[in-house]
Image (cartoon, rainbow, N blue to C red; front, side, top):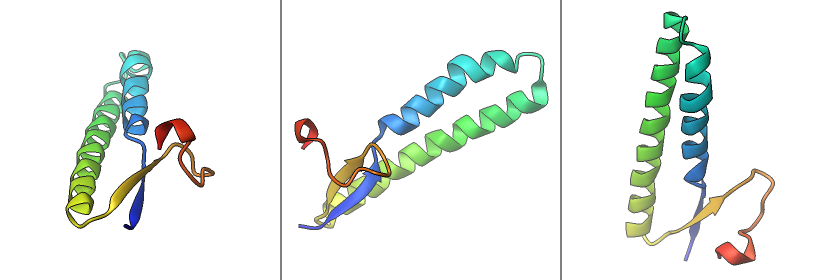
Length: 81
């Protein structure tokens, strides 16, 4: 069975939480940048949902999903496989 390499879903969640918890506070008095941040968060949410759709389509096509935690990782850690 072929596998498809994708980023681990936690990558999206980590970015969104970092931006919501820390960056958002720093932009309280800057509406232009705050709007850009909201746009970025919306884009990340869409990307996460789009990846979920891709995963489902790949599974239906007979692929397995192989999540990567790093661009340097060549295979999954033993405890995750």
